[in-house]
Structures are given as structure tokens and as C-alpha cells.
Length: 324
Image 1 (tube, rainbow, N blue to C red):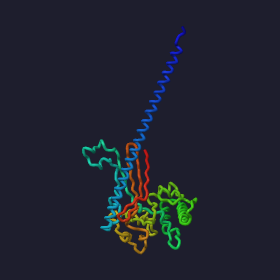
Image 2 (image 1 turned 120 degrees about the vertical axis):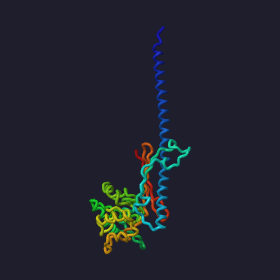
Image 3 (image 1 turned 135 degrees about the vertical axis):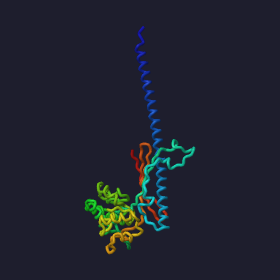
Image 4 (image 1 turned 45 degrees about the vertical axis):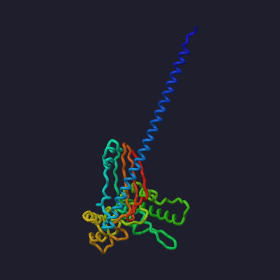
């Protein structure tokens, strides 16, 4: 009789193939389960972060609302010594919750929250360079005083003024087309955020240097002399230089200005229209709210532009981004 070695070898090979197939199927099932758990974890983390950041934004709006109430009753200005101007340093979220038997540190989401509010009227508004003229038909033109203020800012920062002129002309062209031609065009879109000034041709390096002193707001605004930087103050008026601007900052740190007349007294040169109601003020309507949430190795940040109208604080836009 012939030996059965070939049959035994085939059976062994078949058994090995079966084991390999089962192992592959088991690994695939394990990977699918791990993937589903990770997706569920990410979705849960995203939902939790969204609710926390929404709560932080509502908290900020409440602070601004109460500040507006105080301004109405006492006539106080907006300045950097108010509660809204104090940043929230990173703190464990559990520290904001009351401790009881159903709420312990081990059961609470290990999240760390920080944030701050910035007065955007402490910066020059790029959109101020466009002046709208009402009549039978609305027309737009460049505002020479506001254009001159931005030019002084560019010069003080050592940036090319030609870049500013090209950007302003592009904004004027786009605004005119938006008034008269509803059809899509090749012109730049109207910027709604500071970073979108790049659409007008302003370089990334220029934006980085301009950001502490320049912003983009949806309507014409005045510069708050209680919160503005020395560079923004000096650029806002042809009668001011950095030395006089720093003198104003030193004076407001002792006592915030209740009116622009108080600032004019500090300068002691009332015959020169350095501070004017048309371009300066002591109260602000536009604020940027920033929230930062750290969950494990993930950081979720949110920026929001809010506008305050009396006791009504509304959100203009929000943006959220995640990084690790």
C-alpha cells in the first residue's frame, strides 16, 4: 500500500490556511471595534467641547451685558481695569462645579478651560477707509482722514505704504461692484475678518505686525482711547506722536478717561484737534471672545465676534479649530 504522506501534508496546509484566515478575520473585527470606539470617543469629545465652549461664550456675553448695565447707571467708560478685560487662566473645569456625592473629581470630565476678551475698538478699523454717501443712489469713496491714519500706522511699523494703497483701492473697487453689479466678479470678496485682508493683497508678514493695532469690523467705529495701543493712538490723529500717545496711556492707567475732553486736558494742547468725537471715544461695542479647551492631548479653540447694543449682546460670527 502507498503511504498517506501527501494527504497528511495537504491537511496540514489546509489547517494552517484556516488558522490564518481566522486570525485575519479576528484582527479585522478587533480593528473595526477599535475604530468604532475611537469614532464614538471623538464624537463624544466634540459634543462635550461644543457645549463647554458655548457655555463659556454665554458667560462672556453675560459679563459684557452686566458691564453695559453698569455703564448705563453710572456713566462709566470701557477700560482695561474692568472684569471683561481680565483673562481667564487655564483652570480645571471641575473647579467650577460644586462638589457632592454625585459629583466628584474622578467622575467629572478632565478638561481645562481658559479664555480672554479683547476690545476690538482698541484697534483701527480697516473698513473705515470706505465712506458711504447717501443720496438718490448710494455711492462710496475713500475716506482721506482714515486712509491717512492707516498710512501713519504703516509708516510707524516700517511696512510698505504701496501695499496699503493697493489694498484700499481693491476694497473700494469691490464695494462699488457690490452696490451696482449683483453678478459674480473677479474682484476680491469683502473681508469680514482680519485674516481675510489677505484677499486684498496684504502679505502674511504685514498682517502679523498689524494685528495688535488693526481690525476689520462690519461698520464704521471709533477708536477707544482707554484701550488702544500707543501705535494705534499715534496713527489715529496727525497731531499725535508716540510720545504723546504714551503720555495718554500713562494717564489712563491712573484714571480712565470719562470723555475725550479728559484726554485733551492731559495733552494740554486743546487748540490742535488731536482727539475728536468723529474718530475717538471712551466706550466700545465690538469685542472678540476667545475660548481654549484642553481635553487630553487635544486642544479646541474658538473665536467669536460679539457686538453690544445697550443690553443686547449678539454674536456676529464664530469659528472653531482643533489642534494637537
